[in-house]
Amino acid sequence: MKKPFEVIAIIGKPRDQQAIATHRELYIWLQDQGYKVYIDDRLSEILDDIPSDDFASLIQLGQMADLAIVVGGDGNMLGAARVLSRFDISVIGVNRGNLGFLTDLDPEDFHATLSAVLGGDYIEEERFLLEAEIHRHGQIKSHNAALNEAVLHPGQVARMIEFEVYIDDSFAFSLRADGLIVSTPTGSTAYSLSGGGPILSPSLNAISLVPMFPHTLSSRPLVVDSKRHIKLIVSPDNRGAQEVSCDGQVSLPVSPGDEVHIYQSPNGLKLIHPKDYSYYHVLRNKLGWSSKLF
Image 1 (cartoon, rainbow, N blue to C red):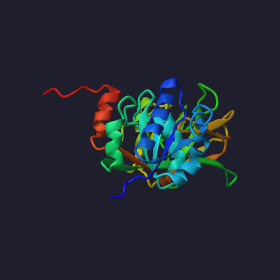
Image 2 (spheres, rainbow, N blue to C red):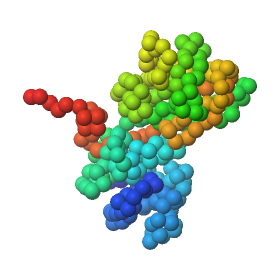
Image 3 (tube, rainbow, N blue to C red):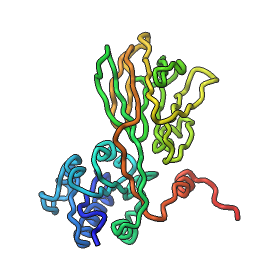
């Protein structure tokens, strides 16, 4: 019987010795199970006891591997997702971070769960990404993808900006605020949640627009269909520079008068979970919700 995965990539920039140990343990364990294993080349100097031929760039890993195991927190998963979503590769996470909404496996006891996953006993779901483009004088000046959110905000702290919001070229509203969070369902438990946005089930094809500290009492989060094209026109009267932040990791410079276009990416992340995965269990565990009364 053919295995669902033949070639496995181990990805993630470790922050501490425990994470490094997890990378090494995974590599040795997977090789012992008969898999061809490659490692993120950003770890080549740290894991200097592993053959150099077993290291590859993130793009190469996406091209070669059937499964990527991301070790770290959600930040590592977000960075990997923006690249790996371009390829036909499944992704699962080992939690070496803090919250770990996107990383399911326990680093201290991953063997049995990962064995079941590698044997085909897993849940698969598609998570969509956003594309963010900065338009200036009719030309695209910069762009990037985001799994969680794209955020328009001022380049300086505590400075309001003015902008207009269009949905499918139809004017929706104007806003004077600290910015706007445009979030996927995956990102609805991240920055958007901190800003008062709704929690969206990952299976929803929806995007939330969450104003950041709006200078009005009537402004509320708005949820739209994920196929809608969102356009933000930044007022030419704004002072200083603004930015669009993708997943809090990539910043795109925005000047007064620019247009910001945000829409669903044609690429999706193929995220897999252990068979006993429950999104609502994750919410209860991570957000401290009450357990059952009876």
